[in-house]
Amino acid sequence: MPRVRELEVFRLVLPYGRRPESILVRLTDYGGMTGWGEVVDADPKTWVALEEGLAQALIGVDWEHPDELGAVPGGSAADMACWDLWARMRGVPLAHALGGTRTSLMATVRIGADRNLESLVARVNRHVCAGYAHVTLDVHPGWDIEPLRVPTGWP
Image (cartoon, rainbow, N blue to C red; front, side, top):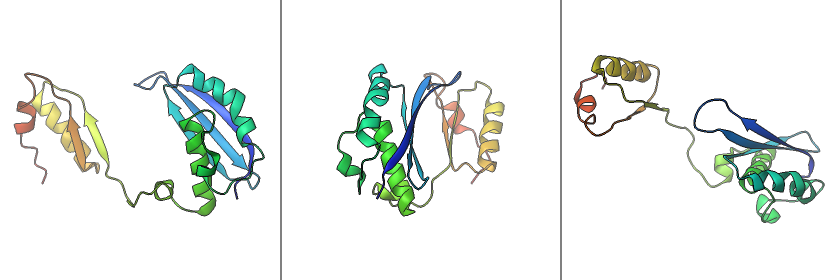
């Protein structure tokens, strides 16, 4: 039975990419097991809800299953941290705890538009040789058919 002893909330601002801000939640039970949750591009109200309401809702509360907790303050980050903690305590993958059945993932990569066909083909081949089974090309009007017609030498 999970019983949260400690919780921490982190605000993470990344200097690059499309995800300018994330909020991470770490729950620790009395046995030292931890569960993590994240919300990306959070509304400022989420931060306030996590700071003010999450500790009161979770610390010292006994629960058998995350569904028993209902609407946890802080939304999806806190909910996912509870699910992660629960799954880790049972030794099952989180995906299976949530009803998933897959046991592996397909590695994918996205390649930005490149007007030089030789360069584009070289980049695609490099990723395929590195083990990526799925390659997505960025295309735009006027540059959508040419890159897909080029033979790349892969099966």
